[in-house]
Amino acid sequence: MAKYSVYRHAIKGTKAVKNGFSWPGFLFDWLWLCSKGLFGTALVVMVIQGLAGYFIESQAAQFFVVFLVSLAIGGSGNGLLGEKLVKRGYRLVATLEASSRDQAMATAFESKDQQLAA
Image (cartoon, rainbow, N blue to C red; front, side, top):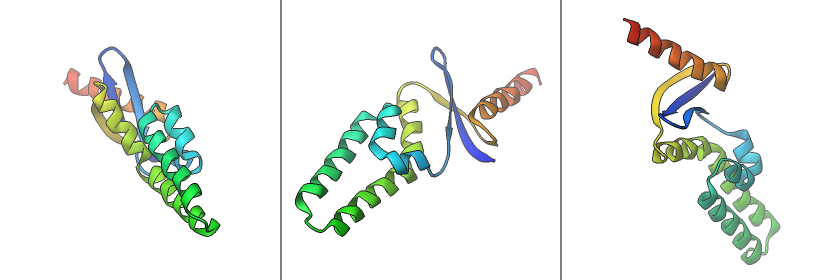
């Protein structure tokens, strides 16, 4: 089971973001960022990787820079996504363990409904 943060927006609905390392973010860094709407961060990643390719002659050093950037995106990408949601008016309603995003959202509102009924 993974840990998820569940966010809710009054008009846009509910979203769940997995906490922790993002393998797609690590493997596909700027493409993953674009798919999540984090275009500014994707642009920064592309510029850093492009500059590394242009200015660093050693292929090993180029690989190392690209690897470090990808590792940073894998490690912080889901957190960046959560921050983006908060900036767009979502609010964090729960952080819980679940086997999927759908289960996390269902569990979050199941416990919310129980609290309201009490």
